[in-house]
Length: 92
Image (cartoon, rainbow, N blue to C red):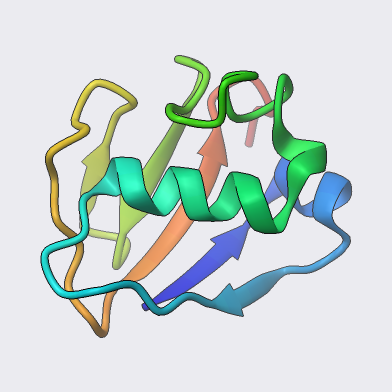
């Protein structure tokens, strides 16, 4: 899968996207945890300080077709999915 950063997350990480490999069956919570470890500057800004969940004003768009909120922790993205990290406060 690939992770695309937009708005605030792009500014904080300095990258627009990166590939992420997780074991099959990994949940969106696993994705958030992996992103927090790779980009600790997101903690407290985009990801909760404990590194396990998105701050509620942030969501993922899956392939531009489905929205996954911070409460959808059991959603399992597919291997070829593109997850776009969006901040609802960034505007459009």
